[in-house]
Image 1 (spheres, rainbow, N blue to C red):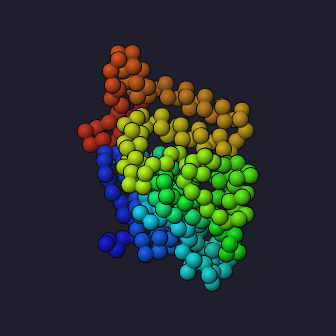
Image 2: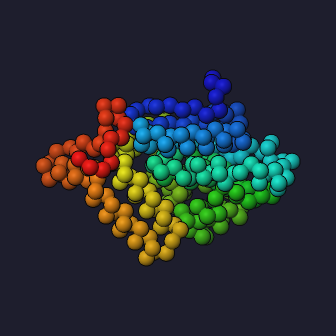
Image 3: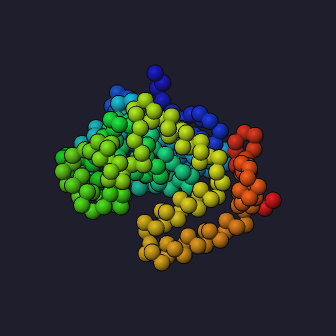
Amino acid sequence: MSDEILIEERPQPGVALLRLNRPAVLNALNLELRRRLAEAMTRLDADDAVRVVVLAGGERAFCAGADLHEYVDATPTEIVGREMDRLWGAVGGCRKPVIAAVRGHALGGGCELAMHADVIVASETARFGQPEVLIGLMPGGGATQRLTRAVGKFRAMKLLLTGRPIGAAEALASGLVSEVVADAEVEARALALAGEMAALPVLALRFVKEAVLESMNVPLDRGLQFERKSFQLLFDTADKREGIRARLEKRAPRFGATVEGAPGPLAGD
């Protein structure tokens, strides 16, 4: 078994897979793993050869939450000094599509990590929850905000105020996950989705993600204005011209990609 706590793989062109690798503690997030994850996400976001990022864990757990050994004696000043907002921000701020492949436990910080993704593919036996209240804490990685936006106030309150986990079927019905597949198929399905996205126009994907995230932070009229401006800007891209010509000519489009699967020009012919 690798000694690495975060493993990076390139399973197919345009796709990077980051695997949390602390199986003995169900991939609990210690500070080192958080920092490594933030560094990797920042680097992949700047790498033109990467179009989609997949986050995965292990068979027993995607991530069981924070490593409580680092919390038990921590003071408020120490927690502030860890700059958790910056570490979380590197994941949530990635401009490229992020897919979480969730098997087993996704609890506390693990559930929050999954919610930083854009698509969540869950196994049939996956479990999601925010149990912080059971140890005298509350979520600190965004669950009170992201979970509420994902499932609504009343479902979120039940999860947050009881600390009880839910299974994959309930998570799907609640809108917390994108789809549920058999346990053995989770990563294959996530990679298949990543491959589909990696073949699409880079700038269009980026603008879609930006517009959806913007909709969570602004009133409807401002969100619509943001969408219109992004839509208009895409009319100056080579991928727009190729996509429409291919549709009219009844052929498969070839969006700006090199033989290595890296993005090509985003604008101009």
